[in-house]
Image (tube, rainbow, N blue to C red; front, side, top):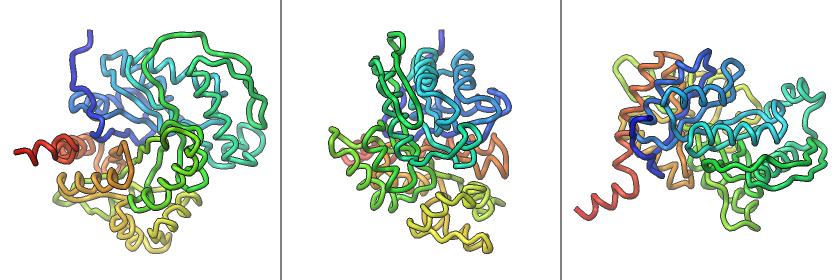
Length: 340
């Protein structure tokens, strides 16, 4: 029997393992951290090394069962039936809530697997998530669309809750996520952009639903420590995302000036725009609170800059300090402090 561990607090940040692991043991320190601290969830990205669903199931088998999420797995890799089956399997194996996040990938990747890029990425996402959600809800799906066909249902089983998420960067996809997703999953989106651009688009898309999707946002974090260069960490954290057109466009829309020929100015823009949060643990907790006030329901602590420059132990140490500091900014903690 697994040892008891703190229940995840609904407003405590989640933890993201941001790289592609060669083996589940590389992710184990992060799963252990989530269990030890009661962090909201352990997220993993799409990996072309050790596949994320299998890694998370392996960790659960080792006793490191936590709420989990995928941010995001790529739609061309799986038919919606397989995607729903994998997500449900994680919920069965872990016994914990799952967020199954999906994204389209870049056009070249889509073409390499399907023969051509999606003519309408928004339609592809809308149809895919609708089928996955219906299958998880026990419905029989009859869908003949341009990007997949689905006629059938999953075998009925009881399992922990599964939310379906969509990767979102810009307002168009946010409107689509508002229509069909349970969770909108964003990366490197500053709080002002979330509040001023993404939340209104999600609400517009969700106008026929009871509420907009929750927002889960991956936020780069790094404590200020002796000998650590915040600019170097910020550039390592952002990495190749700065070269991807839709990320660069989102950052421009958010007022974060990215110049491939001026790394110093780019690093300063990432830090000044709160794309990468640095400082003391308390200062980072305050920065995360700004994300919450902007509408983010589940901040994901992304330590990739520290992992890439200093390694896993340094990244886990940062996360542990930040999670402890965040307790002072949970709504319940603030109310208790006011009462005292």
